[in-house]
Image 1 (cartoon, rainbow, N blue to C red):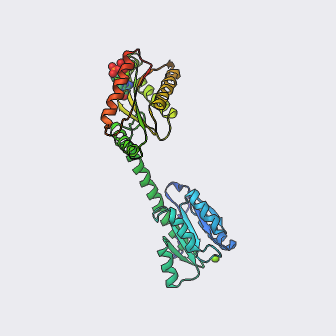
Image 2 (image 1 turned 135 degrees about the vertical axis):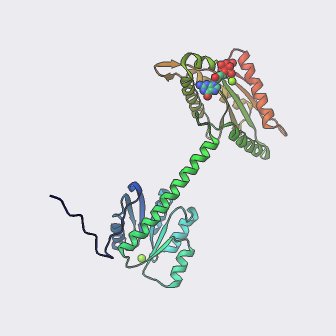
Image 3 (image 1 turned 135 degrees about the horizontal axis):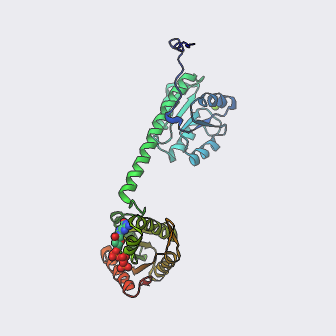
Amino acid sequence: PATAPPSPPAPGTAPVDPSLPDATPTRIVVVDDVEPNAQILAAMLETLAGAGVTVFTDAERAVRWCVAHDPDLVLLDYRMPELDGLACLARLRAVTSESETPVIMVTSDDSRETLRAAFEAGATDFLRKPVEETELIARARNLLRLRLRHRALVRANEALARAANEDDLTGALNRRRFIELANIEIERCRRHRRPVSLIVIDIDHFKSINDTLGHAAGDAALTDFAGACREALRVTDLLGRMGGEEFAVLLPETAMASATDVAERLRATIAERQVALDGVTLTITASLGVAQWSEPAETLDALLHRSDTAMYLAKTGGRNRVVA
Ligand code: GH3
Ligand code: MG
Ligand code: MG
Ligand code: MG
């Protein structure tokens, strides 16, 4: 038997649609010194799809949690002993901007002064007690939607920055970005009279890998190679892909002797590595040239050239070696 379509709710009683796109998980924090008050708000907010609600009655702990966990929405009681809503908000805003963490101030005091103080302290929105569920859900959902859109934009921005600065295949810095960052680093070391060194790495007989296993295998070998280099370096070292199978490493705060040690460690790491590619196990070697930046006026270009010359000597000397 055909079922009648559900009748529309009477005007004014339609529930607010609590859904977010794909019910994306969101973290909501409710802070109220009176536990039952906090629980009422939490119960309302839990009807939002994907919402995980955490309740705090201790404002101090709430702030610490928020700083550590970066929630998507905070409901903040205005009147609390010790750390009140405004003080809480000031602490939060010291580490997160308004676009980052939306904060709804909740208070029974609806004086104009309180309202103004809340917004001046960086509140995103304001609700009066007793909180009306439909209003809370509607406002919370709007703020969460904006927050998710903001997060998506931030991610898209990061992806763009990566695409502009990193080599697609290996994730190493691309040549342009490497040169940009290396110049900044050299300038910093110049100012502080600190050493800085550069290693140029060129894979040995790489053409034969392409010729025997194909270009895709060559690509995979390059990705593996860059990953192995990255792992063997410090986070402050810069790894750049300067051309096809040629990489450069800038080592801040590092003089010739240590840079040579690093190069030797890289060489050994690479040579000992077994690269598994489609059933074939491959060993790769590389030739490395090391040079230390020489004060006061050497350019990055000149430094690269000296490392390149050393690398070429490593090639003519038999490959799989370091020349400093
Ligand atoms: P050598 O020991 O003298 O350095 O020999 P080599 O074969 O490594 O040097 P050569 O410069 O003659 O060849 C480099 C090869 O690297 C040629 C090129 O096809 C290959 N190559 C460059 N970029 C890529 C890439 O992105 N992917 C793949 N698969 N191969 C690449
Ligand atoms: Mg209170
Ligand atoms: Mg080569
Ligand atoms: Mg080459």
